Length: 242
Ligand code: ADP
Ligand code: MG
Image (cartoon, rainbow, N blue to C red; front, side):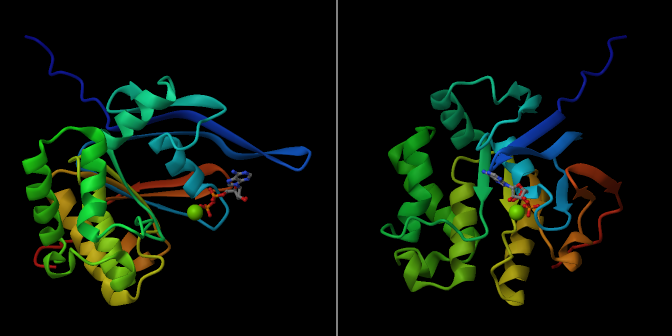
């Protein structure tokens, strides 16, 4: 009887080392990090400030490269691609959400969501419009969608940024302190959207300092001093109805 096919991890971080030059010295920020994330996981990365959490996420999006080791995302070594291929790859496979939203200030929320679809060319013109509307409705911003980012609240901008991250329907979302700049109500709304997305099959890696949020997900990885100090799987707290 044939064996079941081996499951490919969505993210496969293999002995990643990252060094930065600080003045004349070199500081090792990531000291050989390895872990695998499988489809449908919601992984929260915690750890003290300055210990390499953002650097680690940047390794997984291809925004930055490791000095040693490799990162495979959906089976592909993302640092083996040239810059052009990598940015096309990223546009289709990874949705990125930042702490400070990073919306294009001169574009409406709707056009911010359209932009990655226009760049990736995955959907037809008609599909793009329908999708942008659908994604903004999903985060309850239909009424606001023709406003500029500066005309809406931080929480609304972050929800629009989530729509933008979902534009090309990527399997993986990577979020660096997405609730770090939001009031508790907005943070709760954003987190509820993430939970729903995981229920619908997305995989999420997110850095947060919010212990209450971190306690709700199925896996926590703690980074201390450039190493994994804890990688804990747990029963996901029941979030039905939230
Ligand atoms: P965290 O997200 O856990 O707060 P970071 O990954 O942002 O930590 O940063 C880890 C360390 O790496 C910090 O000391 C930071 O100053 C340093 N660092 C990050 N990016 C760079 C860079 N491009 N050049 C030099 N040092 C950097
Ligand atoms: Mg950080």
